[in-house]
Length: 266
Image 1 (tube, rainbow, N blue to C red):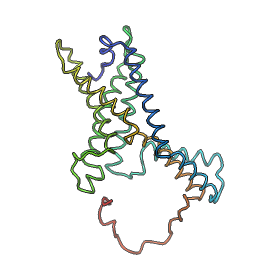
Image 2 (tube, one colour):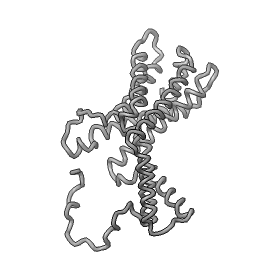
Image 3 (cartoon, helix red, strand yellow):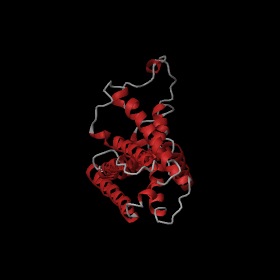
């Protein structure tokens, strides 16, 4: 299963152009949903206004090389490894889910657009990338959903309590999980089976919910966080600090305090 392109097998009964059109539709849904979210929440407007305000209170003018250095460090640390979460379980779960999703989506696009023609031969590493990415997404997302969510971990809410903010992670986990199950059932190559079509349908529905629900979920959050991290680090580098006072340089004098236990009571 892991070295087989599931979309090539599907192309024997479903035209490749139909699968490619579906991927393009998902891209359009992301674009439309994100633009609607930007208009509704006015995030981009806030970022630009905050950047202008910070520029007026900057203590120094950053050179081009300094800006490149800050941006590079932000990409390598805050964005690529989610360092803001600190060293721990939340960071590991986010990294697993993030890179798993990237591998899963990239593998899907490549195999659908380049390896679904009748004479195509899919290099073995693309199906491996797709399956490993889906598995990482399920493991990282499931770990976060069942054990690491703030309302479960810190507020003693039951794991099965679902609110609108959970739409993104649940749809992400569902699309990867149903994709894996569909691929496995399809790889059995059993005649007269119906269950692979059931999970193909669930896979499609999960993707429609994931990409079609951008406006109502935290999907667009993925695009805002890198921008916020860049703005924060640039503000610290030029001294504006988002108009916040600098950290005190006085030594700690009050013992361990809240550091006596792991911070989780948000």
